Image 1 (cartoon, rainbow, N blue to C red):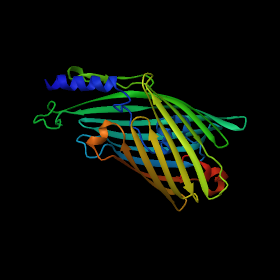
Image 2: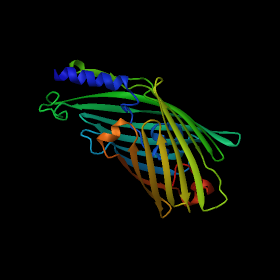
Image 3: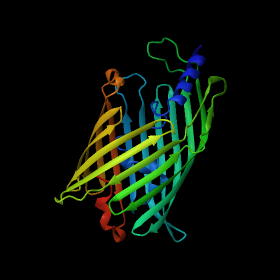
Image 4: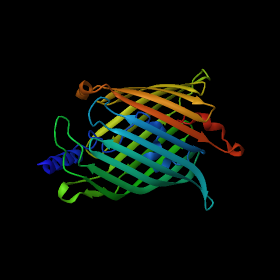
Length: 307
């Protein structure tokens, strides 16, 4: 009976891809772009490291807790302008644990006054089912012991950046690898598509920078999107608000320390029926970006990815 319950749950996860959050989703999505679009790697011309921890639906038993680390840097590979990146993500949802590690490469091409980047990433995705985990209000676990499965994962993306505008399109889990737990059930990583856009709006007050950001995610059947507006004061203090369609509203705050270190916080309040079961979602972001003095570009403070 327990295995039947597990199989039903895995099937539900497969048929409700976006709502079940097969892929983690962050309020700080604008700072983690290389994790879902490899074409972003190296396009800022600096070494950039960002780590975000998200506690979703706090107060709900078995609610998701996710940590993602993204590092990217520009490189000169065989005489070509390129970028490389590394993403490590650990996602825990009830009795399910997902670990992803992938490497990315992006090739940069100057197109007119803009930059076109083409990226690919590849890595390993490990899913573990903890059979000793108990459903809320149930005295017994799902089944004894743990079972795990590792699969190869592949993604690709495009980026175009010109002046203050940045547009991106990518696909993750391109091969839709099947995760087969044999008699315990099976699922798969559904292919997801991402579209991102950001525009730095010049203001009369030189101390203020206004940047709208948008991200749309789809599995080909269901669409979810975030609309965000961030305002940056004196290149150091950030405040923002995000709306996620039919799901949540989030407030963001951040601070840049010594021009290189960044810290950010976010609080997300649900607007769906789930809001009655939890006290909201919380995120903490830490970031560090630097570049050798000899090559620091003037546009560093204008990046849509930095506070």
